[in-house]
Structure formats: C-alpha cells, structure tokens
Image (cartoon, rainbow, N blue to C red; front, side, top):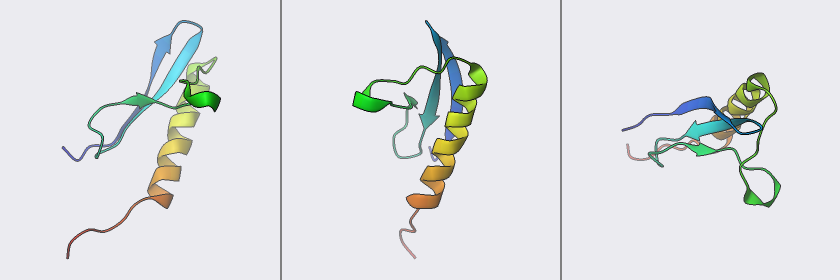
Length: 67
C-alpha cells in the first residue's frame, strides 16, 4: 500500500511522534539523539514533530520512478 501517515501515541512520560512511509509499511517513532525514540512532553509537541518530519521527507526525498 502506498500510504503515508503521521500520528501521536501516548507512552510513559509523554508522547511518541509516529511516522509511516509508503516504502516501510509500518509506523516507527521519531528518533532522538543516540537513535532512541524521542519522548515529547505533550501531544501538541509530538504533533508538531510529525508535521516537521513529514514535510522534511516530502521536500527532500521524493523521486520519480518509471515513465
């Protein structure tokens, strides 16, 4: 499925910002320094991280394959 998604999920101590890209097929958290999932103190901050990450992806990695 060619499906992109971004959402937050509550975890102990805050929220994870989760991203799903078409080529991966499953959602993964936004990572912080050291490669560990970053925990955001509020849902709003996690939502902002989702938006920033998706925009960074769309503006930097999109490519056209085929004709």
